Each structure stands twice: as C-alpha cells, then as structure tokens.
Length: 468
Image (cartoon, rainbow, N blue to C red):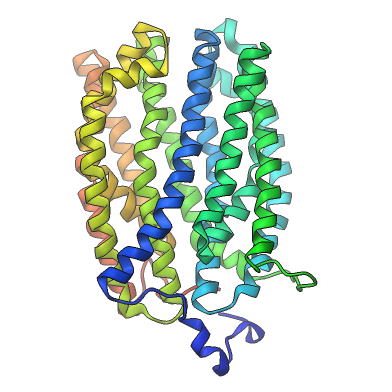
C-alpha cells in the first residue's frame, strides 16, 4: 500500500489522468507507437553495438570471437541485473505518471541506486572468484583459458557500471519521455562501439578494449541521463530524496520475476552451448553469432511489450483498469504486423547476415543455417515475447517465469535428444523453431492475465492494483 503522505489528494484528481491514453483504439495505438519507436531505436542501437562488438572481435582473430562466444551466457546473467532494476524503475515511473506524482520518480530511482551499490560489490566478488570455475564448466580450450578468465573478471566490473544509466533511461521512458530515454541509450551504445573499434582494432588492445569502452559509455550515459531528468522537471533542486520502501515492493513484484527469467535465459543459453559443444568451435561460434543477431529480432517484441506495459501501468495508476483489455489487443495487432515483416526479411537474408558477422566461411555458414531454419517462426516468437513482457510488468511475473522455464527446458532436452538421434546441429535448430511455434500458449496466458487485471481480480497470486 502507499504511505499516506504519498496518496494523491482530492484536489489532485484531475492531474492523475491527464497523460493517460483513453480506451479508444486510435489513442492507444498512438501512445504505444510513440513509446515504442524511440525505445526501438535505442534498443536497435544498443543491440547493433553488441553485434558490432562481436563483429569487431571476429576481426581480431578466431580466438577473440571464441572467448566472446563463451562469455555470452555470463553476459546474459549480468543482463538480469539491468532488467531487475530497469523494469522495476520503469513500472514505478509509469505508475507515478498515472497518479500525477512526478516528484516520486527520483526518490524511487535513488532508492534503487542504494540497493544496487550494495549488490554490485558482492556480484563483482563472485565473478572474480568463479571465473576459473566457469572456464572449467565451459570446457574452454587450454590456449584460451587465461584470456577467458581475465575477460570475465574485467567485464564483471565494467558491466555493473551500466546500471546507473539504465535507471536514468528507464525513469524517462516510464514517465513518458521515451525520446530522452532513447538519447541516453544511443549515446552509450555509440561510445561503446566506437571505443572497441578505436582501442581494440586501431590501437591493438584486442578484447581488453571491451570493458574499457563499457565503462566510458556508462559514465557518458549517466551524465546525459541526469541532465535530461533535470530538464524534464523530474529532478528538482532541493527536492527531498527520502528512502522509498515501495522500491522493495517493485523489485519483488516486477524485478525478481524479470531477473529470474533472465537467469533462466542464462541457463538456457548455457544448455544450448552444451548441446552444440561436441560439434566444435565453428558451430559454437556460428550459433553465438546467430544468437547475437537474434537479439535484434527479440528486441521489437520486448520493446512493444514494454510500451504496452507502460500504457497499462499508467492506466492502472489512474485507476482505469477497465481499459486494459483493449490496450493489449491494440498492442498485439502492432506486434503481428512487425514480426511478419521481420521473419520474412531474416529468412531471405540469412546468407548475407552470416557473412556480415564474420569473415570465417565455416562460422558464417553455421550462422546462416540457424537463421534460415528458424526465421519464419519468429512471428509467433514475437507475440510470445510481447506477452511475457506484459505479464512481467503487471504483476503476473510468476507466470512468465514458469513459461520461460518450460520453453528453455524443452529446447535443451528435446534438442539434445534430436542431436543424439540425427547427429547434426540442424536437428537442434529445428527443435528451436518448433518450440517457438509452441509459444502460442504464452500469448493465450498473457491475454488471460490482462483480462483478470481488467476485472480487478488477482493475477499471479496478487491483486491487480498497482504496487507502491
């Protein structure tokens, strides 16, 4: 429940709903698109920077790309930290807007910073100590072991600095300033890619350039984010910045399920690499490169789910829960249109994309094979991702976690059986495609969760009211 001093007073009632999209289709579509487009631009830039870094490392030699491929599951784990804080903060900012309380945005964000500062020290220590163990688990080739251990340790320090600009960007997005939030992410992505290109290739630092570029991008993004928060009048001079207990509620109801899904993704990617490991470094590197490209395909579904979630939470904050079902329907219509185009483009362009990722013919061929096998199933995968993201943001995170677990468990277990039966990696890729098609069950579950929320009924074991 909200503390009494944070409840909107009757005189503020008119302000609570001034920025909340109405129930009509045109208003909702416009709100979702106006949020999703800047967010998509920022995410594309961030993911292009990720893919670009992989491509740059591919030009540093096969060993550098091999180390980066093995680091992918670890990077996914750190990604859970960003989602843990970022989505919690975004939901809090969206609900603050629905309630007409911009003064709540910065205190909640700073409360997340305090929690992160404690957790970051522990996470870095764990990464430093366990890096050699990870090398053993991933069966890193002896000649690459020292480079892998060093890379994991330095990346742990660098990765965790990104939480600061993630919080700035999510505050801006959630409150309805997606262009400003996108600017923060764009600057960070540009500096990260440019830093690796300059330090790693031009100056010959190799993989060691990646953590340095990440730290530089985090500092620049945080500085811009703080300035934009002040310009948007969300951070005011002399504004009280007390500890907000409801930050823990947001982390529990939103952040934990989202982070749990990312940890499942970490385990799932590790399991996929384990299944493909016997086929050698070329298959592992090709699959890793394809997975990096697939992040670009995953992005629109998550962005649209996030934009829909922001609108839903603004409506929840304003008490307009009867609008939720029509909002979800309009958002899913947009998702279908986007993914029909993306699936066809990826299917036809698989060969070209494989050659873009690396100049190694064997690795490029494997990347192309994976994309060509699964591309047309992206239509249902996009709807699945949108549904999962919506559930994570409206209090049905437990359902999302369970469905994510079932999805990856099916891929790894059925994929292992298929590989053992047919003895070739394409059998695993086909298994991934079939599991993507089964994602229709996730979409139906998301529709059910939003329907319950629109009736004020419990979802995922919780009441459908906004947290905080």
